[in-house]
Length: 234
Ligand SMILES: C[S@@+](CC[C@H](N)C(=O)[O-])C[C@H]1O[C@@H](n2cnc3c(N)ncnc32)[C@H](O)[C@@H]1O
Image 1 (cartoon, rainbow, N blue to C red):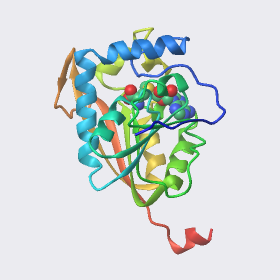
Image 2: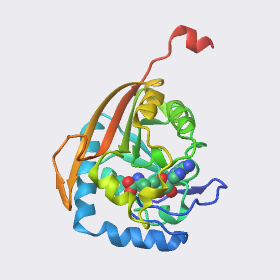
Image 3: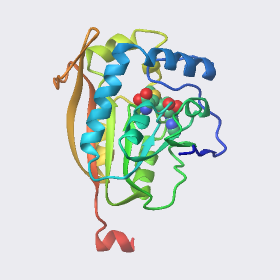
């Protein structure tokens, strides 16, 4: 499959990869690639991928927003999903596998026609998007009727997050939104949602643990609300 990369006229904000930060985008992408080869991160990606595969059953066309170098998205493509990855960083997208269609754009612009996708996913990305409300609203527009959203949020209460926040080089320090309940409410305005903690980390061990203090992720999953006659005419 060929890779389609569309630049939509926005300057890359800088970096990709949730572990790394630098003002040099090329350096960040390279460092991301190196860290991604570490066993710890491979285990994180493996579990996130398994979660998505399980929760995307019945979906075909998937949009991943803030996909970075599209490591997990490549895994979805391998499993037969038709995947589009959007990120503001062209440097990150240059590292995406060819099996993923890539689009360089801001999530707030989301340049796709109405009803293009069966599911929209955000893997540890929504909290880094300036105007995440707009991104959520745009996600509604590009989703088909009954479409699904899966938002994997970093859990600021987790031991892992607190540790990373102390590291001046960690990408986590670029987070812009940490109020999970507020984000959850914004998503719930547009989707029928359920939530759960996922992916425990203690030290360097990755656990099947859903306790809030250990879970790296708080996942908000939803189904697009169907339009009421009133909202159709609004
Ligand atoms: C923490 S990284 C997560 C990358 C990838 N999803 C992963 O799990 O490794 C956050 C990503 O969001 C992207 N991003 C930040 N603001 C964005 C925006 N307004 N529109 C699109 N992508 C954005 C960054 O470029 C970065 O790749």
